[in-house]
Image 1 (tube, rainbow, N blue to C red):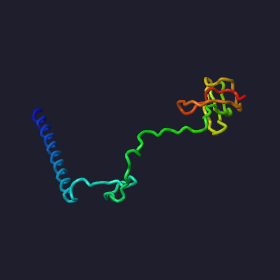
Image 2: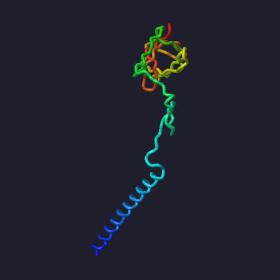
Image 3: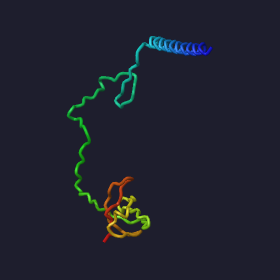
Image 4: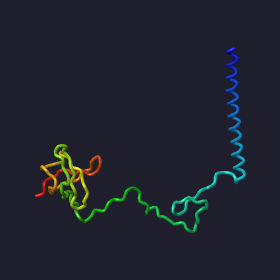
Length: 151
């Protein structure tokens, strides 16, 4: 009796497999028929001079000639500015927590706040002190380092 149930299960699996195969074949034939009706094949897509996709080919009269020597590969070199960049900045201590060992300095030129840690201090600082400092890239942005009281 158990043997006939097992065979029944196998027959059901085989029926399902054949049904899937037939459905797949029908879908394939439907796609072929649709391709014949629409003119067949994959439709072409072109790009216009602005990079947009269009279904018409570009007009050859609007073609622009580009000289191979004019193409620059890589990042263009920065031109040296005539002014020498002064790494030492001036600012005012906006906030400093001595118990936690950090604070913020407001740059007087750019009005940006920069994080400062007690390890970046040369002199002791308090809130509203005028200071000089340098900027260094930290994990979350620019940090003030080598902080000294302004003389």
